[in-house]
Amino acid sequence: MPVEVSVVATSSLGDRSYVASDGQVAIVVDPQRDIDRIMYLAGEKGVRITHVLETHLHNDYVSGGLELARITGAHYLVAAADEVGFERTSVSDGDQVTVSDSLRLRVIATPGHTFHHLSYVLDVATDVGWEATGVFTGGSLLFGTTGRTDLLGQHHAHELAQHQHASAKRLADLLPDGAQVWPTHGFGSFCSASQSDAPESTIGREKEKNPVLRLAADDFVTETLAGLDAYPAYYAHMGVVNVGGPAPIDLTPVTRADAAELRERMTDGEWVVDLRHRKAYAASHLTGTVSLGLDGPMATWLGWLIEWGVPITLLAETPQQVADAQRELVRIGIDRPAAQATGDAGQWATEPGQLRELRMADFVALAAARKGHVPDGLPGADVILDVRMTNEWRTSHIDGAVHIPLPDLPRRLADVPTGAVWVHCGSGYRATAAASLLANAGREVVVVDDAFGQAQVAGLELVTAA
Image 1 (cartoon, rainbow, N blue to C red):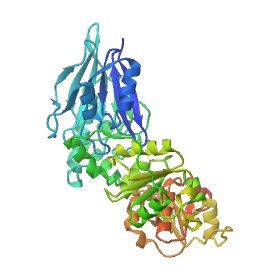
Image 2 (tube, helix red, strand yellow; image 1 turned 180 degrees about the horizontal axis):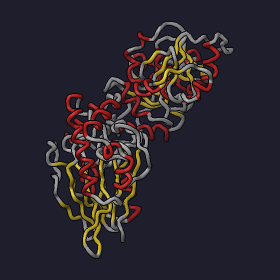
Image 3 (cartoon, rainbow, N blue to C red; image 1 turned 30 degrees about the horizontal axis):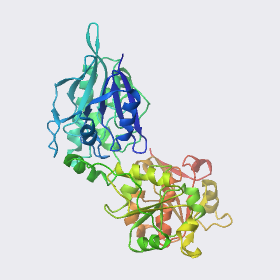
């Protein structure tokens, strides 16, 4: 049977894990912490997991590799150069690992995303010998881009960018054009230097499309470092957990909280997060809560916004939504929410005065308000607050807007000028989160729940990059 490579996507974090098998045995590459998805897939295919591979010690999520290897008895391949607190099968550049009569791995050192980063070439047996069918590249060569090089600190970013260029060139020189490229990052992950430009790729395609294989080393380094934006604050905790050896996860339901307990938790400074869609949140929500709907990258923004270790309570319409949120959160090391509540907003308040609405509008309404034609029921646009990331702002922004990226807002609420605030992002998701924080601070706020591409169409003047 030819090799079959299955993708296990974690779209909320922008990552992919892989299960490659010959119909009898399987290897797993860069598994997320919720390994039940991997176990289910292996069972569905009737294959036995014999090897679990880590391309690097991840900064954006807690790995499930150690636990998966423990449960299955698989060899756990981790770079020999990484000092870790658990037993593993140490591998280094040039090592070859026989998986079965039909599958073999070749270990290639590809520093850049981290110093000890490895890629794994997957060879398949043919009548004339071994043939490279593809390469698991982790955070090295991605689709149309590479992994970012600043996660180990800005003082290493330039050196790692040089390594990243050399590593990509090494892979391109080593492998045939038809070899598949299977990266872990690049599908919305902040570990990627820029966003993926395709759903799949080969070495040949990357030679044509990827700047790392088209630019000279110095030009690539300059371009890469100039394009890097901020990354989630919780990354600081992921590497530490992965080096020490992550503990098994507990996804059983957490304690239910009644309305009085929810109020008490907010009074104590804990975070109570409303997981419903932002439109449901705007219609009615518990005063003091923060909107981070499950329809967006909830875990990324929550992990970025909170002070690490602060208790978190989850509010949702159904128990399944709470369970989904728990799964998202354990991937970034938030193991157990403090409490949960389900139902509708009216069930979470002890009296009607504790419920609040959030006004929403679009860019057409904002343009009208800016010209003094304020739509009925809305305040004037005294302040336009843009909470997108810095690279988004530099590309294009509304003339006269104030820029505070969402992750900075909790500690910069005092920097928002006085008056009614119309807050926007790229779609409405981050703007709603920001508006909930502003409303909790006593500000009058309107969410621009609209795609930023509509701003100019609505008649708003934009400042664009030269």
